Image (cartoon, rainbow, N blue to C red; front, side, top):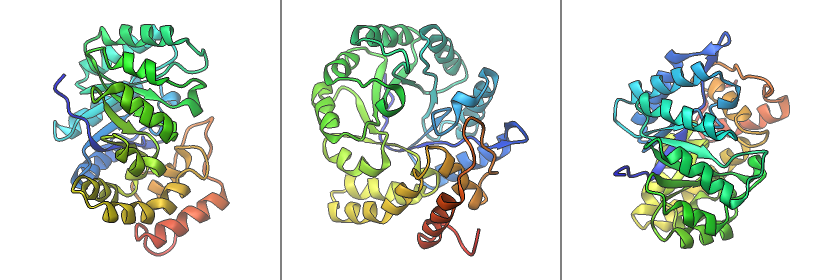
Length: 296
């Protein structure tokens, strides 16, 4: 559909203040990310706490990011749920708000069959907006098979797949099944460099909320054939990857952004603020990596 998704797409955290979306901070995050060289933005995904937001809040966040990005990079809006009709409506709304694509997770909890998965995505595709399918079995309870991924690649509106299993053998088989027909984007920061090597085109990243320039540098080195440089960059980022998943995402990244002064620390239940052991570990990593100065 003419949309080229590759490189580093940041899965934006959503700033909250006083129980509402902090659009001022969200706009600032968008500008900082783009100035840092990221290739795209994802709003209202897992990292954006979309599951804890009302429909009107999600719409406001999408509209805010689209307006602030102003066509400088593609904006992908999370619209997936385990309800096909709700997914269609959210995808239609994202299209109306100007999003370039929708990120649609495999329906969680209900455990559909491959036939059900295909029916779900075909129904969402009828909206006409470009779609990035999203495989994250650790959260949904199901996994796309290579055969199902290959079938999804045959739907014109489905242009990409976020593969977040962290299973490189599965990723390689999916890459083979899709045969270059989908933009394959890692959803697992810790394995995204080897994912590029098996056929991936980029990453939808949590870590780039904190280290966008470093994540972009890794991609640029790999793309230029500087494998040693990309490997060194990846190794330097490993402590950050670990610290950002010491508790379930997005708990640590919200704490990190607050430490950096990019957002407030507010996070919505059922998530809770980062515990003190994780907070101290994260602070040490941010200091050692040069992202944070002094104490926090």
